[in-house]
Length: 79
Image 1 (cartoon, rainbow, N blue to C red):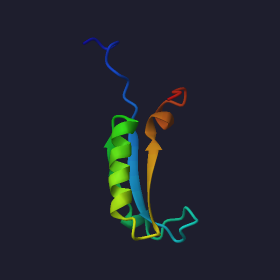
Image 2: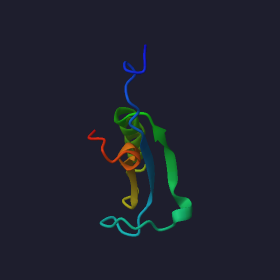
Image 3: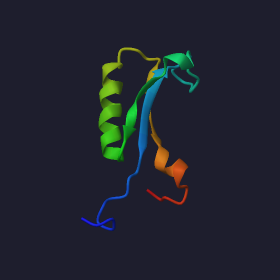
């Protein structure tokens, strides 16, 4: 497989933590953020996000997020 046949890496970061308020986006303690990992595509990141989100469903303040790192690294990326 040549470089032109290799799918482009679209890196995604999955992380989460406890929010001050379920309606907000301010974390209670930045030192306690859970960095789940960096994934090569959205599908893999989504699986990790879903697993963590389901595991913490009983805590209304816990939130996990998927960050499209590839968009930060290459703003011209449309995906």
